[in-house]
Length: 474
Image 1 (cartoon, rainbow, N blue to C red):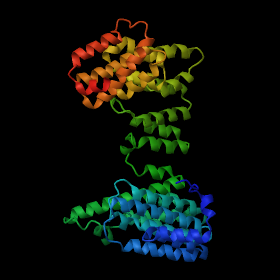
Image 2 (image 1 turned 90 degrees about the horizontal axis):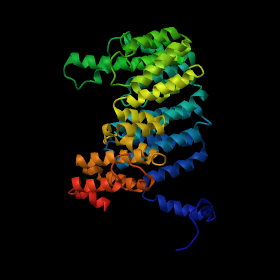
Image 3 (image 1 turned 60 degrees about the vertical axis):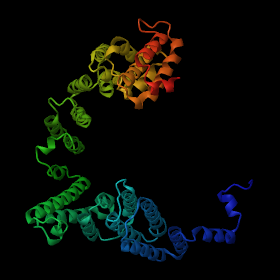
Image 4 (image 1 turned 90 degrees about the vertical axis):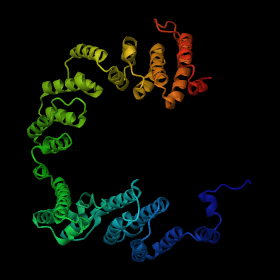
């Protein structure tokens, strides 16, 4: 049926009374939409009226006991996001402290909601993260006493079992100020030194053995305290307090050392940062690429003006990891004309690197299709057709200027799929074979490799019974 488009202008032309009738009809029987309409109506009555409706909804959510299904979970997450927006836009501009109080109360709903649903996809967690982001935006306008705010933050983080308050300290940094951060640090240090309370132990009442219960409670409490102290140290710029959280051995872990070095560099303590990184650098672990640790090492050497050592470190990373970024940076640090010789040495290193798939990956990332073609032509027999993550985009990149090299890569993937009877890859193999046929017209000389007709005949001879593949081809 022809008619006007359903857009804002045409709807506005219907007039308020008609739209009101339509809206009432649309929200009939839908409690969530009815709540949104009521809150929109209350918004004109001022922040206190809106806050009253918000509190009623919070109370309703707290009283809930039934399991929240995946579908209902999405609806609830949308409502929580809408409530955050309502508080931030309709209440906070006129009454920031009231807005904060409501957002804080919404974050406290997280525990009860999580206990009634499976949030493995992070739907509720994301909604609560949005609420904390709103808290951060509101923080500079708050007038709440900083030390009292610090106590609220400490209490919330201490009992938080689902991560809703993980970023509370950073979010409220402006509102806490120096006095609030000092109070928060004092509370955390006092808690760390105090014996376990009944409240601490009660969280692990399901553990029957008293000793194990105490151990679990102590670990959980100390972890929370350490997180608070780390956040405070970050905001106060106290790198030593941050480092004190770890043992000397822990500071050499590749997961910790880069961040520790970054903090020391920011504090102007480059020599200490370098000593820490050098203690963490791997000696014989060639399987794990510790790129963050290498980057921290480069940053330390650069901060100290040790250009020769930086060039050497960059070259080592290129040699072991075939890292294009490290090579580019190494070449830029070389004097004029020396970079030409180094570039050729790098090229020869890549051409001889094993496994060949890593060398092809370098050529793809660099990108250098001429080098890739040379690798394929020289070492095609070594190429593992299972490495399709590298071979597929590389073949596409080679198609125009180096069609024979592209065909050899497609053939490697086809041969792998058929010789290993990987039926799940037959569709890809059929497409690769079609690409080989399309490239055939561009290849004047197969350089000793079978022509497309000969290769296709060989496939039919060796794998003619694999009907799942040939159905896709024919």
